[in-house]
Image 1 (cartoon, rainbow, N blue to C red):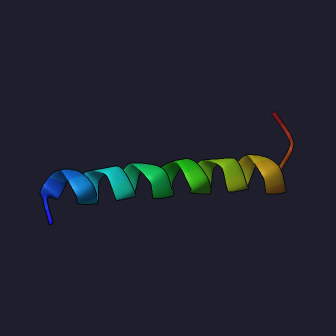
Image 2 (image 1 turned 180 degrees about the vertical axis):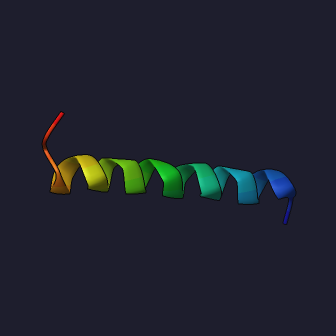
Length: 28
């Protein structure tokens, strides 16, 4: 288990959250 793995997971979670916000609030 490397720190890079954790960083990658964090980035993925951030992207998912961002996409979710855009999906739930289509007000760009």
